[in-house]
Length: 462
Image (cartoon, rainbow, N blue to C red; front, side, top):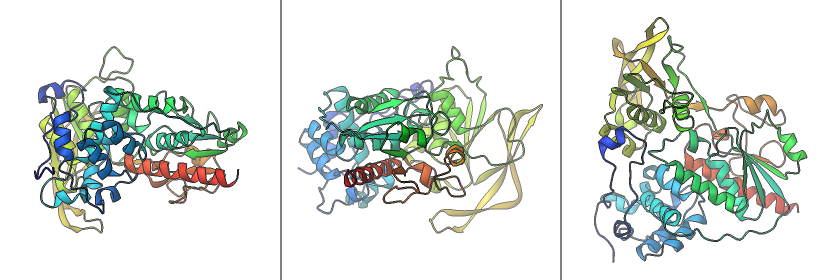
């Protein structure tokens, strides 16, 4: 029976005060009853527009139908045919801009909560059921994957299930890439990430940490060690700055540094080596998910006032709407149509931010507001910490060390968008290392494409 409700099933949230003082996950998983009710909202459209909006190609109507029938293991199998990281995607994927954006139900109300249903299925398999048994083929060919972020893990999972021996090389001391260092535990609990990585290890994928390719090993070294192909998924982890006066003051940092210190180095705990002596007034510059993550983390570290400065209006913010909603509930303030022009301080220490006031003047070709400064109009915001979140770029390390590869002027690897092949035979690349900073699911799409191409190329030359 179809559930004709125009609205998504309600989701239970952690209490606001408990959120502000800890890093527990904010959104609870759907209950069994709510999951079935939500699944029955699906019209099971023959054309499956939602599936066409999924970058990794999950058969969404099929898995939702399984949920409606209580067939959780079967639903999980449907998802995992296309996506090896469902618990992660259910939490951090931008469904509202992809699969849910194409849901027919969204024309007259809320779209079906596809992301929440994916999270429900995956969590049930992690916590309530034993994961499906995986039988892999014995295969002599070895693949090296550089980077253990979403693109690298996806490629490794796909190739592992195809029967290849896969080794992943991670520069940091913890696997997960941006999933580990960039996304706070209140959005992606560490136990969930660890469980997904454990699942890859169970099919034979090996992960080596503290391995900086370009320094510790070169791509030549990998081939000399017997690897038949290499997939580069090093991401875009180098933060951009604004090059403004005062940006070097103590108290100004990138969102990357701030979140890495929290997520990997436990800076919120004074017992660890690099605690953050937390300021009272924090300003975050930017409008994406990373900016919102930084602002919400600052709240949890005890800041008395946290403000997000964005040069456009709220409707133009690239951050997910639900993250903005949660941030407001937790006390984050938003300052729209303002942009920093100077960080000012005293004795080398940040005291505040001088901002120009902006106004909207038309739209660009992406539909975003074009903004220009209002002449002479300025505001001053007090701050003893400013967190810059205006994007990331690709590190120069591979560009400087791997001369056989081709790079563009922004140090991004030049690779075919369809095949992921680079200028060097049997070397493939995808994700942010090729496109620049993008979303988790698009990086996963590239990893899946690379795995299929590697399998095709190696099989044809067997």
